[in-house]
Amino acid sequence: EIENAGSYKNSKAVYQEAYNYFKTEEPELKEERLMILESWIAMEKEHGTESSYSDVKAKMPKRVKKRRKIKIIYDEQQEEEQNKEDEGGWEEFYDYIFPDDESQKRNLKILEMAHKWKQQAKTES
Image (tube, rainbow, N blue to C red; front, side, top):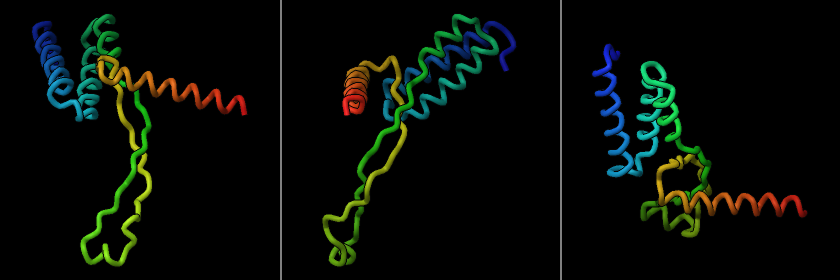
C-alpha cells in the first residue's frame, strides 16, 4: 500500500519501467504487459489523479480474436500410418493491440479495412 507521495512516485516509476521493458525488450509477452497495465490502473484509480488515471487507461490494448492453423506432428511410426497432409484444423486465440505500438498500427488499419469490406459485401448481397 502506498503511504505518501514519495511512495506513489516510486510506484509509478516502477510501473512505467516495467511497462517499457515489456514493450521494448519482450514485445511477444502481451498478456504480461496487460497485467502490468491493469495493476497500474488500479493504483492510479486509488492514489492518482484523474489525469494520471486517464493517461494510463489510454494505454490499454484492443482485444482481437485471431485464428491460426494447427499442425499435427507425428513421430516416424505414426507418420507412416497417417496421411502426411493431415491438418489439425484452426485454433482461435486472443491477441492484444496496444495503441502505442507503431508496427501494429499498420496491421490494425489493414484489419479494419478488411472488416469494412466484408460488411459492405454482406450488405450488397
